[in-house]
Length: 272
Image (tube, rainbow, N blue to C red; front, side):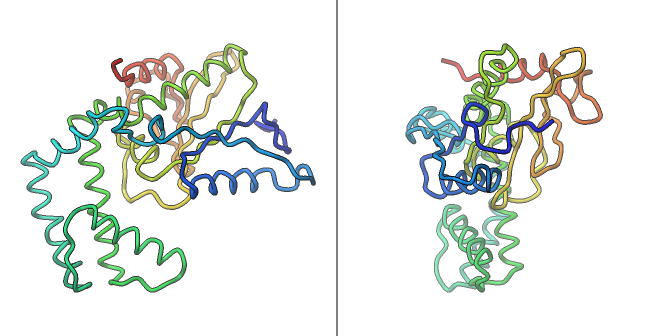
């Protein structure tokens, strides 16, 4: 039995995006692809958007200033300083030599990585070697893992992904309780959040920077005895969330018991 109808039904499907044109375009593309041809007439689809000051799909230091404090403190630890000197500084020197221009910060490294990614996407020649582009991606990914993990992945995650998890749990609870008919929520976000913020907070493996069209799913499952479970996937691969690793409810399909999922989300609730 299909999860949703072949035609778009706003009672079944709810679409969200950050207030950025490229994610709005992504949301429109996904909806168009999923429901193309059903029906054969013009149909309006609401895309729900929050102001940037209230956004919870990406880490929001305006809402939670402690995020900036954690990220700054992360860069002052001896472990980070050692990593920076042994990994980032050599990379910056290579980039400067290749481009003939100063590379002054990790933000500049990101700009160059983003530039290379966009060039590849449009089949254009990148301004430095593929090997250097791969090294840039590796170092920048590691930078985010390190800063998103301070002081611990769970503590940073309380503020970076916790508010979104609260909303997701409530949506699932509404469906379980029969309070709302929405079966599918589509949210168009960014690589730094909710993709990376979720992966790091859940202590899931991050082997590369999230590519375009990467997707995380949180699925509500129901067993024959009406017991509920939650399963997570990343780009189609089942992921076992850290809070469920020792849970007896975890089955071969990576299912996490509803009780364990609720407890995990509660632990990620930021203080008021």
